[in-house]
Length: 401
Ligand SMILES: Cc1cc2nc3c(=O)[nH]c(=O)nc-3n(C[C@H](O)[C@H](O)[C@H](O)COP(=O)(O)O)c2cc1C
Image (cartoon, rainbow, N blue to C red):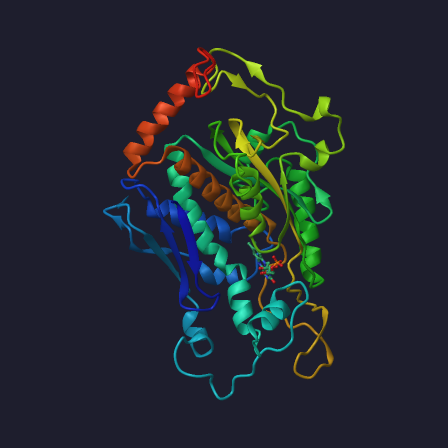
């Protein structure tokens, strides 16, 4: 089974990612993984922390001479700033004599919830793990998932749709084009340069005012085969798994499968993706021209595109601080500020891509199985062959004699 975990604190020694169940023989390009990490760091609205980070991976296990060997893969991203934090974050020893615990929780962050839950008298441990620094580990795992998906002819992309009150206007670009044309935009928006300038000015104004912004973004995959996921058990529905994975990203508070909310306003005749037939169409001769349902029906991929939209709340650390209460003194105070993003929506797109890639890679491996990449690809070729011939002879599992 393909699984992944992360460990590490924001200002600790580093973030470790453990990935199990990737087939052997998969070529791993270190530069590709590092590039994914640098994509996560870029984006207009990022805080100064990004300048410090410049993340690079160190492979500890599971890869030999550039290829996976089937055993668990452990990858470390060291924290370059650790020497400045060693006194505060040392796994050994005891607190420095001059250490003052943090007792002022930020509204909107995990501070108070974490203190209550773990019986902490200091918010520092909550900040350290709830912080989005952890998402560097997700991007490491996501990069490996993307490498596997590339072997299966799947490409993953994403773009920003709105920041604060400004949305992208109607565009002539198809969804597929938008998914893969935002890379050079500092805001990760696909086309509209005029809007880009407008959004940049707005983010600057908000930054000057010590405030923050959220927004919405889309992530998706192209070249997905039909038949991944299932409706037979609740937790195995791919729509549910995608929603859970994307919702697990800090500050993502809404996940929409395709045009779910718009389709709720339409009659069925306008909402559903029609089915077409073309004997030459690959991989399946029965196909869709639209993907209003996000490319999923019954929790199973229909083939072609798979896409979801996410809503990110505004960053909870505001330079101007929000009204809160000091847990120690019980007095009303203004929340403290620690280096922070003003708007992280462009960066969250990259984390969203990673989560989608992880869910999809897992679904492919469930469908195909295989311990080595050559075995996975043999099975993939067999599945494509089945899809191509689907409907020719009705002799599947429930054949009626
Ligand atoms: C890419 C990314 C960057 C983020 N940067 C910050 C940040 O700089 N400051 C901050 O307070 N929150 C930031 N957040 C959001 C917090 O991590 C998040 O709000 C917090 O963990 C509480 O979780 P919740 O919002 O899901 O309830 C970021 C989230 C993401 C996905």
